[in-house]
Structures are given as C-alpha cells and as structure tokens.
Image 1 (cartoon, helix red, strand yellow):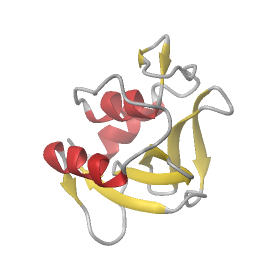
Image 2 (cartoon, one colour):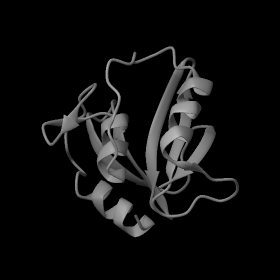
Image 3 (spheres, helix red, strand yellow):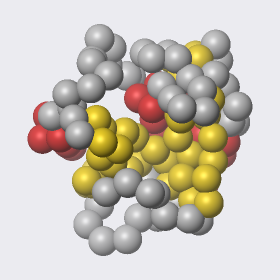
Image 4 (cartoon, rainbow, N blue to C red):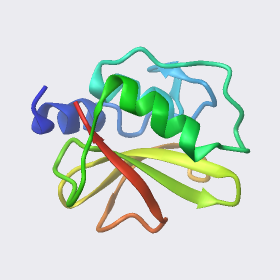
Length: 123
C-alpha cells in the first residue's frame, strides 16, 4: 500500500473520538488508528500503561517492514510518550496523525513528534 494511501486513510478519521481499544468510527485509540490506516488486524486487551517496547517491536516486525533512517509518508512510528507508555502514529511526511487521549480525538499535528522515537515501520 503506497504511503499516500496510508496517510489518506488516517486523515479520513481525523476528529473521531479517542476510545481505549476502539476499532471503528465510534472511537479509536492509537492501535486502532494504525490498524485502520494500514489495513491490519489489531490486537486487543493490551494495557494502557506498562508498555514493553521490545514486545511491541516484535509484534510490528511480524506484520510490517522495519525502516532504518528517515521516515516517509505513511510510515508507522512507535514513540515513548512517558514512563511505561508507548504510542503509535502515522507520519504524513510533514507531521503526525495520532489518537490523542488528552484531546480525546484523532488529530494531525505539524512537525516532528514531541516524543522519543523508538522505531519506524512501513507496509
């Protein structure tokens, strides 16, 4: 799937409410957004905190290709947003689309992500 198509699918759900373990138009979390944008099956039942980065990387490696170097539009970014908390977002080439728990909806923010990047994957 071309990166532009991934970005378009992510942009199509901008404004959808944030909902933990959400998987449809009624609500999405970061995993649900990633699954929707990349057309992947999403896991369920994961904790909100206590993220094991190695385990998440292994799950992503099983379904996507890890990218070394600069991210391209449509790439999936894994970030650490706080102690024990991981987050996924779709890179647009100029910003990040992600399910923002604080703003309670899927948003697009310009520029580089404000959190440490732990990895990048491509469909």
